[in-house]
Length: 292
Image (cartoon, rainbow, N blue to C red; front, side, top):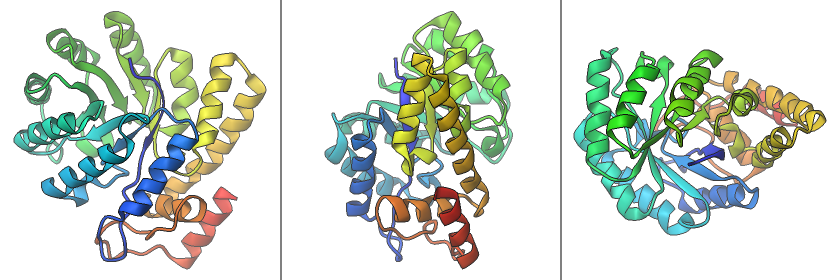
């Protein structure tokens, strides 16, 4: 069963849009050195949508060569075409990743029967561990606990979920109505500030973007919750609340996160790949104030 602090890691590119392998390796190393438990590569923060299939394969192979066996490796393999999702999931399994994190097709708000079939086809194609990715703001639907229990009953390699719903209700229900019922099912919060309630409800931890910037903070916060150290929980949660402001500095938030990474971890191009939108001087100042 997976648990702990996992980072929805950014993918670092140079100004021309090429993957900066040296910078990405340094970012990974910083997470390992801070004691985090793993990372999700090519999730939303990792800009899976800005890379084609072959680029994703190359990046996953590079990451596996650099970090396999050093901490847990999750790969974002979901997408619009179930055939590509299956191909990519098989690739990361061959590379040595621990689990695939799979979101359902987006754009149309698909009925649950279609979503269930999609996940079932992916799970049946591999014996690799799979975590579902619930992100209603991006795929327009919320997975029901009933559907998840049904999938877990049919596919033993579906072992968890990253829940990026904007309220605590879905996360709480996934814990009480799925994990507590089927056992050995990891429920991660996709929102950094929900780590504490996730753990108190009995969840597995978080898969968020802010550990890109301050990984040790989240390691310390989780330890404090598990040990009942309320003073440390308060202090850490206050800092998390401050860092959450980064999500509102740029639209999308990725540029702000990358700028903060550049200031605190490794120099990098602070923009989404191929985007003409650049972080402004005012936004840079806002990031500096938040992470001070």
